Amino acid sequence: MVSALYPGSFDPVTRGHLDLVERALPLFDHLTVAVARNGSKTPTFSVDERVELLREVLPKDSRLSVTSFGGLVVDFCRAQKIGAVLRGIRTVSDFEYEYQMALTNRHLAPGIETVFVMPSVQFSYVSSSLIREIVRNGGDVSSFLPPPVEQRLRERLRPGR
Image (cartoon, rainbow, N blue to C red; front, top):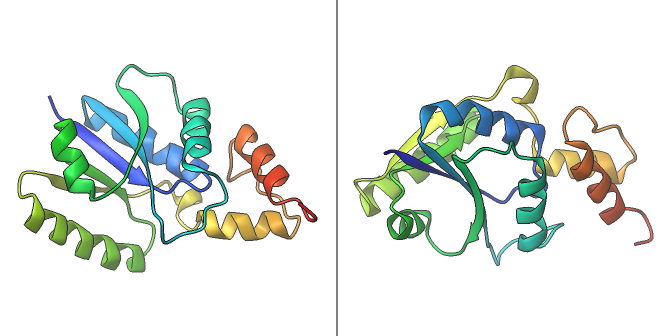
C-alpha cells in the first residue's frame, strides 16, 4: 500500500489545492492532507480552522484523511508510515524551491519519495496570498475558492475587523 502526504499551510484552502487532491487520489492508496504548524508565519486562520475547512470542502473518500502536524515532513511521514510526499508545481520558481526541498528530504529520509503534480491550467497562477489580497480589496474570488472558504475568508478579512 502506498500512502502519500500532502502538506501545506492551506491558508486558505483553494480550488487549486482541491484540484491537486483530486489528481492525486488515483495515484495512491491513501492520501493524508496535513496542515503544517509554522510559527514563523502569521496565518489568517488557526490550524484547527484550516483543518475544519479542509474537512468541509474535500471530497468524502475513505482514502482521504485530514490532520495537522509540526516539525519535519519526513519525521511525520516516518511516524505515520507514509511513503511519499505530494507537492504541487505551478511555476518555475515553485519547482526550484520544491526540488531543493525534495532533495533535502531524500537525504534525511531516503525511503520517502516526493511526487510532483501540476495543477489544472486554470489554477496554475493562483496562490493563497494572492487570493487574500483580492479579498482585502473587495475583488471576486469565487472561481478560486469553494463557497464556504470564501465566506469565512471574507468575514475574517472584513475591513474594521
